[in-house]
Amino acid sequence: MDTDIDLESSIIELIINAGQSKAFAFEALACAKQGEWHKVDGLIEQSKEAANEAHKVQTTFIGLDEGCGKLPITLVMVHAQDHIMTAMLARELIEELIAIYKKSRTTD
Image (cartoon, rainbow, N blue to C red; front, side):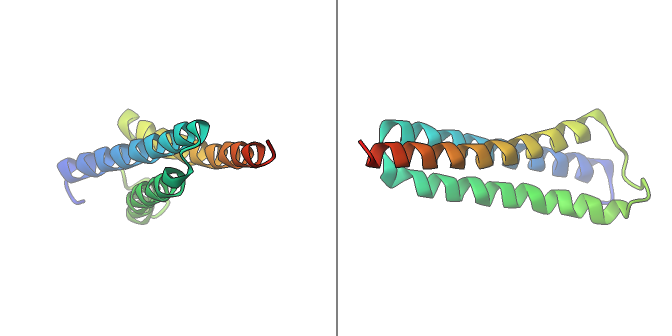
């Protein structure tokens, strides 16, 4: 990540992985709503894996910056950070909703 092109590519990678994480989580929620429980755990796992890939990029950025402002903070960088945090929050909330759906379906 020594050039702007590598930094830009890494930011895009973070955005893509965060987006995939959120998409898998919402797909898991849709499956839970439909009672397709055989799909839910796999989709949540895929969501976690995509989030982990995004987090690896984020961790690399933190390491390169060393808390000293060595990386340029651009609107795209802020946008990428927003994506990863939103995806993480969405998955956490969706996991809770899935647990509620599961509990309500087993008590019917």
